[in-house]
Length: 86
Image (cartoon, rainbow, N blue to C red; front, side, top):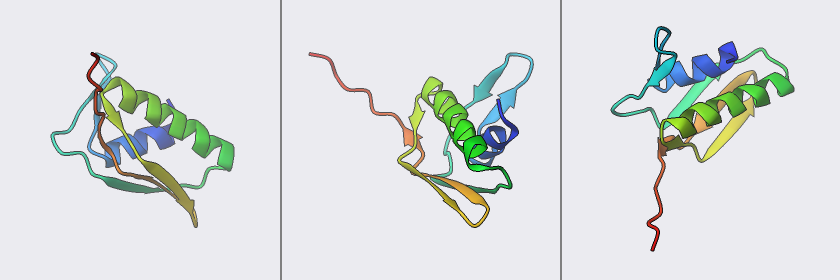
């Protein structure tokens, strides 16, 4: 996982257990997370893909992201809604 992805997840309140290689889910994740970023565009997108995959495996989603003036933000971090199957 890219360092930028780890920084985003840590800023949201997730903690990585290096022994179990899992992510601990916070009780109340931060809905908007912004970290400073000096990466190029492709690195930022790779980090977002890592974040998306980790969040999905923990049952979370985010609504949007923003890249502006050297900062990368993830917005609308919430628990994923599971649709009922009839």
